[in-house]
Image (tube, helix red, strand yellow):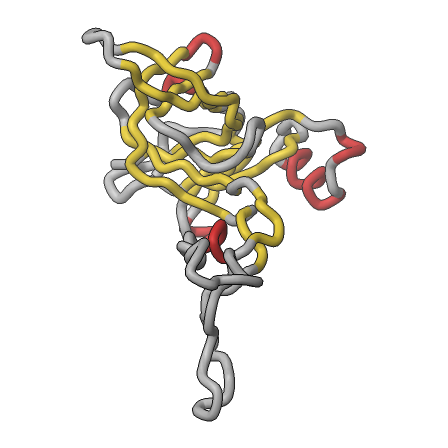
Length: 210
């Protein structure tokens, strides 16, 4: 399942040939350079390792500096691996190859992985979509609370997994079967239908669905 590293630019809308409005998210996909290849003989699995956004040497950790120098590659800020699908091989990829948005076409389906927006400490209505209490008929003191969280005498404890207030967002989210509506290969831009996780400039991993 090959793909690219990219970042979220923002949302807009475009019109199809029938004049229908389609909400889209604009993603800068690549360019990414193949840094190294993983082989079954040496690593036990097949994959290509790609780098995204060149970085200064002083801002790169010593282990990664040695890794990049070993493969005669520029220093990159982000490095990810992509494995091929069952019917694919990596014979056509070699170190130094540059991959860009041209690998995608309109109506392709992709899976997109990124970190969702952080919401901090949130209550049960925002975090778990609780309805809250009635706003009348004697209700007081708690309008947005979670209500009862357990029993009193038996079992005299709160079960694990009870939905309560707490940390919300800033978690790794993957959305599958996202349709690509438009590809602007010259600028390495792709437009996908609907929204995707994260804020502007969020790092994304875009994988091609087969």
